[in-house]
Image (cartoon, rainbow, N blue to C red; front, side, top):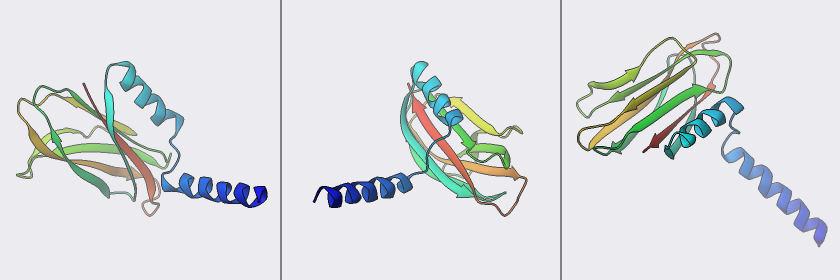
Length: 140
């Protein structure tokens, strides 16, 4: 009976570990940095995207609250990750489109606003490789 419980426990642990990929030390350290600087992390998203593709999610951002959005790829193949925030009219509200392997934006809206957060794998060495890209949203 103990052997069966041990096997079942190992199966559950392995299934749970596949539910979300492990975070790299670099990504984890950025999250720790954000928390140490007073941010509460309330969203942590990821997706597998090829060069030129993106992941996105819409969020409500509240007036007077400062937000930090940080994005990076867990794959060394990706050399340029960008963040774009679009308002409901499709106009860019804020962006980080510098040529870096990570991206960050910090902003404090003057009014409550719904924005579409887009994280793009802008440049990869292998354009067909689906790379793991992550982003988190912190607020304070």
